[in-house]
Length: 457
Ligand code: GDP
Ligand code: GDP
Image 1 (cartoon, rainbow, N blue to C red):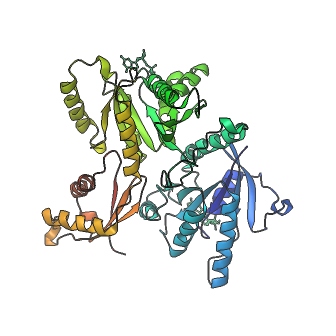
Image 2: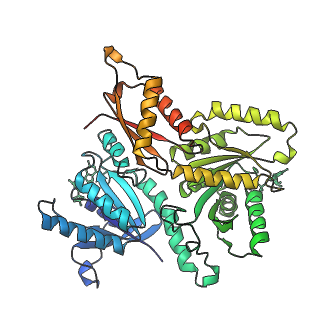
Image 3: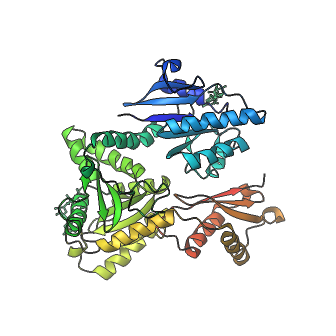
């Protein structure tokens, strides 16, 4: 079973260009298909080894009056309803328009999966527009150039797990093997309230990933009976982790699979990176005896750049002798080696004995909560006022930079926009001061925080 991707967005953002790139000449005759109108083009898309159906709301004119706007809206809604995933394109060169905002609104209400694509992002001309796109509140924009084929790799990696999910769903026929957790999940468990908490456990070979997952599974079995509610496939394990519906991406399992196909070394790192993309929360599992390996640092850094929540778990704590001292050294090491992950929770565990796994569970839930958190504009601006008063921004050339207003533009991870007079003059150190202050004041450990300085439009 494959999935259907709808490319939506206002006219001229590059939908047809992308459609043509994905479909090539394999265009379906839309008119022959029942239920599909002439206004929607449909084709068989190929991206790497992925095969899927793509629909494009082709032939729309720029909106000039009410009736056209209504038509555009209806057509888009129909495409959204037909699709499993929507790729919402905006034009990185022109920035966000009110029509884009109208589309964003439709998608937020109506679509399950939305990928936000900032097209025409080749070269530098698209930078501002990409930042602009954050404000749509639909997550990190994917930089694309439909015309030059840039960003197709990224798109592939975003679509791959979704494709796997569809393949899995198709494979599950007996209801008792289908772990449908959405019923018991609390309302706000994840924003879509449909998917379990997605966790990746990453770390070098022998860090103890398999042991950790097996211990978690073992504990779950004690609570729920043998194999109850646990489903396992080649890349993930789904279970009720201490009452939390969770899907854990098992990179150790991936590695073992990779070994069969004989590409061991290359794949173990690549799979770690891929698991990061699947995940909402990344658990970086370290061996207490060798905590600062280059590979671990690299993946932790990648998790930060990808905007994932991060929890650091130091394993094999059972054989550690000087626990107090070691912990101090570990914390200091992290501050220095991964300043971008300042304040990430550090939990000591023993995957073997199970000690500390309850704290790991709590840290993961907390990081996830913080990653999803939305702070009210009123609170933000009270905070901003105090920060500016405690330590005013510099005054290059005698003209003080003014920070006027802050608002949260996105979550997962939290992103903030601060309206600012000549933002290009504001030193990076001041932005760091704000990010650190925000993290402390609102108590937000374990999540990247994005902050954008914008001049007033
Ligand atoms: P649609 O109305 O959304 O289907 O947009 P089109 O695919 O017809 O593209 C509108 C215009 O944008 C055309 O002139 C394309 O050549 C151009 N375009 C599409 N993709 C890109 C891109 O990645 N970069 C640049 N610079 N132009 C693009
Ligand atoms: P993976 O390659 O990351 O999946 O690591 P494994 O789970 O296969 O573990 C590698 C080795 O470390 C095995 O010999 C485990 O028994 C051992 N190990 C894993 N967790 C612990 C732990 O908490 N304490 C101790 N002492 N050994 C552990």
